[in-house]
Image (cartoon, rainbow, N blue to C red):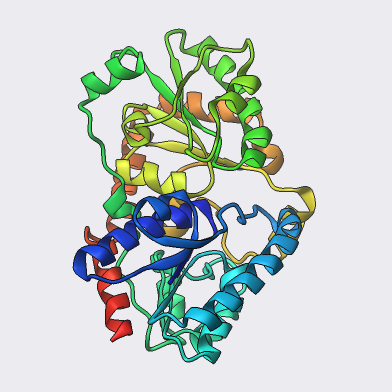
Length: 370
């Protein structure tokens, strides 16, 4: 059984299910969404959309988590699968892991709670209630292996998933951009709250950038979780921006630089070697609490992984149109800095592991079912 309540977890779960089925003829049931369903997972409970942003934003998810927990508990007691695979979403999955442990079901936590920034005490709790923990960030692996002899690091699944299909010339033609001019990508996030908070500032920054670089083009590779109409309503009559709903990685690859909301997209850009400025905003109370609890200096994953500033970050009040524009303009005028960023992103890519991450994870899970 695979449980993946978050949209990105659903995508990872789908690829994991495909690989498991390729290796072995097994039945897979699960709780997830459309991605897993398309890969033949028997979805017993549709549960994508439980991810939150900050502490206070998560409160709205409490009741759905309780309801889904009760449904999954009944399902586990009824089915008793040969192995329980948990993906991300610690608010729900840690509770489900306890149920699996009590029922004697082998429990594998793939993409466990991130602990490199805060709440390191959870590592011991996770180690007690799961039979194998498989982090996907090297920083997390370093911490989990201190408390668990059943901790494995195969790499980040994005290493397998991030690839381009189009040559630059073909991609520029398909997306309606001039390959001889600068292309700036705006990636406002995969959640409605992020887009409403950050896209307006990104668009205003784009107007300021355009005043310095007249022939600059702007493009939005739209996350699958966001409708184009939502973004169009925010753009209104502002600067011309192309919205692309597919070929996300090909779109990112043709960009000279990105303004990107902190999250998975920063690693996708790092793997593709595209320089970026990372931006983010939280509810003020969430941010205040985070400042008290978080033990790392940065929020962007490329910076966290190398434990130094690889790319600029603009957080909270600093994530405004003026700072976004000035930072992008400064980078575009500093070719040496851009080349240094590209080199550092190559190091980030290497730290994320080698190809075959999902295959190795699938093999470990099948080994746990024997």
